Every structure is written in structure tokens, then in C-alpha cells.
Length: 115
Length: 523
Image 1 (tube, each protein chain N blue to C red):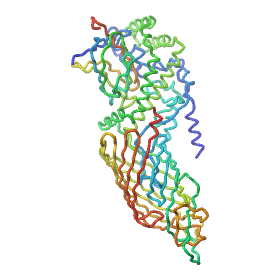
Image 2: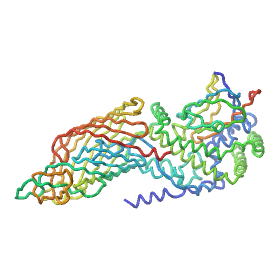
Image 3: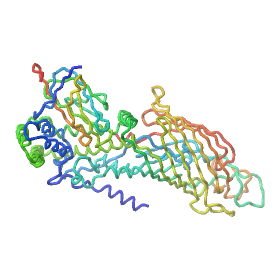
């Protein structure tokens, strides 16, 4: 599966860039205990099938927030990484932490430029 | 006994004071991210680490605790109860009327009302309703209702004074209580000898139990002395994920997560990062951190500026306090689910004050051993002694203060899911032994007959009857089925060589019904 998302550094708004219409699957790797997606909303719409160890959604055009609440098998001591499930297993966030269980990633996508 | 309880309750009610101070410490995430930046040489090589620290919505708790300030103090309103499933519902041994031969080591966390039919150790049968819970249900309810704060890990403790800690919850969780109500005391036919023999032997006279009128049949408390906690094994990880995804077991955490997400969206409106003030701050922050010799000092300045920007609206403080309340509840539910998946009670001590109808009250002291064996088996064993609370009244012959000694064991085997309706089934085999050391004195009253209770060969003036001493053996086979919505139906068949009151062997079948009300209050 080809990768869709790339991490963006030092952008005040965007965290990842991708292509509108691409379907992406995000997975979690627990580095201390296990991590799961407890609840998530993409563009304000709740993602179905949670809690789960991965989420799948289609990228929309614009600067769209992905809000996530993580669950940790070791509570606030839990640590993990967010990856895109694709051939390169792109690391998107290595600060997934039990003492910071809710976070927002803004995914920016526009037609034409791919970013 | 009452005073310590009241004092503890008042301590829990103390407001989670001083959330937010003038110059708060940094949260743990910021401290670690500052360390990651500081490790890099000055300049562009720091950019990846700088990128991680700058987004406010990726450090929600760190920002909210500062924005909220003291407004949290006014937020604590009302509450109610918690969730758990792997606990004993129904009457414990000795309460009578239950289908439980063996006491389990864990009790319901909140209100757990079990209504069960059939008696095992007494010859009367009736409906016994048991209300049980563990003491952590009280602070849990306060936290869920926003009356108190659960200490949020990772945020500075100095700004969380008065919060209820994880260790306090864990301690209270070890203490549980139960009260059994005998709401329907059915009659039965008994045969006995008068305690005060009369010289005259008349015709058989119906003599009845004299019910005490007390509907509380047992009051008990339990302390978990020792438990096993495993949060690292593969079995635990699997059990945790199963509970997390279970509609009933994971409901409280999921509900808390959805509330947290809603509070998060309110606190961090997406237009904040589009504002020119924020974007200007962001650009300045990159330069400041790239060039900083003391990254922590630089970040403290930048963070103070960011908080001023985020705090501009009047609603920001309210939204921040709402968010922290939701985060506090989420962490509580997460810890409770972890505890449920990771902690197994091993040794417990139980005290019960039993008030059987027609008898003097007695106290039971019981040690409980509870251990899982592999994935599907579990062993529970009990040993107990009962003593009369007072020297038995109306007896002309000496009666020992020691009422009886008991021992029992139960082995459970999890059958798992059966079909689409039954989500969990367990088959159990139990053996129970009781040595009746002293004769039980029954208070009878011809003036207040109970339907169906008949004594034969007793003089008309007899007001008390002594039941036989001896040994009781009971064996039971039980199938417990659950529907996945906290409804459990135990079906049991048992054989006993005699009961406490009737010296005859008997076969009995019991059907119970229990519902865990915790799930109703966790939504």
C-alpha cells in the first residue's frame, strides 16, 4: 500500500500533508504497553469502529483536524508511536503519551499540488 | 465506626483547591520535549524537536491547567457511580437465600443489587436482595459528577492540591461492604425439640417461627489483603484490549473519551491557529528556540505568551476547566479499567453480621482465597468461624458461644461465548462443609403463626426450639450465563445431607437473576 501522508515541520497549522481522496489507515505501536484509538473525529465526524488499534478514513481537501483520544494499557505511563499503515510505515508522531491522551493533527490536502 | 466514615467522606468532599497558580510548573510532556530540543545543537538541527512542542492542541492538558486557573474550584457539582463486572453479586455465605456457596474476593464497585431465590444453608427460603459496593465508589461518583478531581498524571502536582489520587482510589477499592435484605421470608415445616422440656405431653401443637421483623439479614465488610497485579504480560494486554472493546466493560471509558473529545473541541477552536497573533507567535518561537542557550527559560517566556493569546476570550477559562474535568474523569475510567483487567484478588478478609429470622444474631469471620489457574480455571476457597453475638437467650442448657466453623471451595471453568445470545458462561463446582458446634436456638411464637411453619411434638407453651448440632455437607453444580449487558442468570443444583434447621438430606435447584447497575450510572 502506497503511503499518503508526510509529516510537515514548523508549519503553524498543518501537521501532515496528503492527497484529497486517498484512503489512509493509521496504526499505533506501543513502546511502553499497548496503545489504542479510544475515540476520534476527522473533520468533526466521529470515526466508527472504535476503540481499535487502527483507524481508516478518506482525506478531504482543506486543513482538516483529526482529533484523537488514545487509550493506554499502562495508563499515564504508556508510550507509543503513530504510523501510517503503508509500505514505508511512515512515523507520524513519536510523542503518543499516556499523560497526554488527547491531541489534534491537522491534515492539509489540496487538489493539484498534492499538498 | 460512624465517625471515621464521616471524616473520610468530608475529606473527599474538600474542593480540589488551587488548580492553577500564578507561575505554575511545566507539565511533563513539555519538560521532555524541552530536553529533546536542548540535546540538539543550536540552529536548524533543532527544528524537528521544536515542531513537536509548538502546537497548543497537542499539549491540551499543559495549557488548560494554566488557562483554567482557579475556575476549577467552582465546577464541582454532582455525581453518581462506576463500572465493573467481575465481582460477587448477591448474598455472601451466611446471609442465606443466595446461590453463592463460596464468597468471592471482589465486590461490586458501586450499587449492585442482586435478587436471588433459594437457600442453601438454611431451611427457610426466600428473596434476598443484596446491596454491595466498594468504598472507591464514593470518590468515583464525586469525580464523575464533577464534584471532585482525580489527580491528572503529567500535570504539576502543585496545581492539583486536593485532588483524589490513584493510590487513594486503589486503597478504597480494597474495602467493600454489603447489606442483604430478606424481603420475603417464606415459611417451612420444621421439627424440633423444646429447649425447656415440659413434663406434660399433649397433642401436636402448631408452633411458628417468631420473625424478628428485621428485614436486614446480613451486614458485611470485606478487605482485600493481597492482590496480584500484572500490567505487562501478553495475557494482560489481550485482556485489556478485550475489556476496552467490550460494550459493557469499556462503556465508561468510551463515554468519558467522547466527553473529553467534545471538551477538547470546545477548548481548541480550529480558527485559533489561523489567527495572525498566533502565527506571529509561532514564527518568533521557532527563532527563539533555535537560538536559545537555555531552552527551558526560553520556552517559559514563549509559553506565557501563548497562554495570554489562548486566554483572550472570557469563555476560555470555562472551556479549560471543562476540559480538565473531562480529562480527570477519563483518566479515572482508564485506571479503573486497567485495574479490572490487571488486578486479581488473592487473599481477603470478610466480616458479616448475620441476622437470621427467629435466631440470635451472629458474626462470621472469613478468610477468602481467590486465584486464577491458567486462562479458564479459577479456584476460590473459604474458611470461616461464626460466633453468637450474645449468649443465647432462653436456654436452660449451656450453649457454646462458637456457633459453627465453615470451609468451602469452588472451582470455576469459563465456557466463554455460547451462541449469539450468551456472551459468557461459567460452570462451577462447589463443596461446602459446616460443623454446627452449638445448637441453634429458634424463637417461636404461637401467637404469630407464619403460614406453612409447623412444629410437631412440641408443647403448646414452648417458645424456643433447639435445632440439632452436627456436620453439614453441601455439594453444588452451577451454570452462570450472562447476556453481555450485565445480566447474569445462575442456575444451580445442590445436594445437602442436612441444613442448619432440618436434619434431613435434600436436593435443591436454584435459579437466580442479577443485574449490575453500575453500567446504568456509567453512561
